[in-house]
Length: 129
Image (cartoon, rainbow, N blue to C red):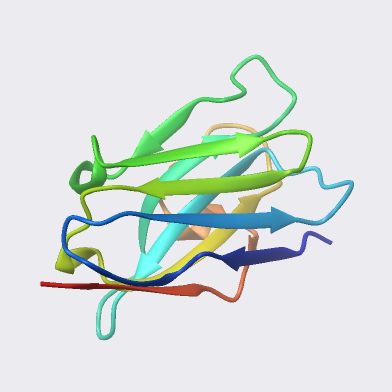
C-alpha cells in the first residue's frame, strides 16, 4: 500500500513562494503523482501532476490553467519524493493541498481526483493580501 506524507505548507503574503514536499513509501508502483487542492466550500481540483512510472513518458507534467507559469511540479526518483514549487502566490491559491498517487496504468484524465488511488493528509497553504 502506498503511503504519502505532505509537508511545507504555511502562511505567506501575496507574491511570495512556498515549496511543498510529498514523501512516498518505499517500493511503490505508482505511475503518476499529483497535487490537488480544496478550499472551504469548494470542490477538490487538480493543480499539477507528473508521470513517475518507469516508462517512456516519465517526467511529463500537466497543470491547471490558473497556476501555469507560477507553479512547478517535480519528482526526485532516488528519494521518491514529489515537490511543488509555488511562486507568485495569490490569495486565491489558499487551500488545503493534497498529495495523491495513481497506481493504475493506461489513459486517464490527469487532473481529475477520481483518477488517483492514494491520498495524503494534506498541508494548509494560506496566502494573505
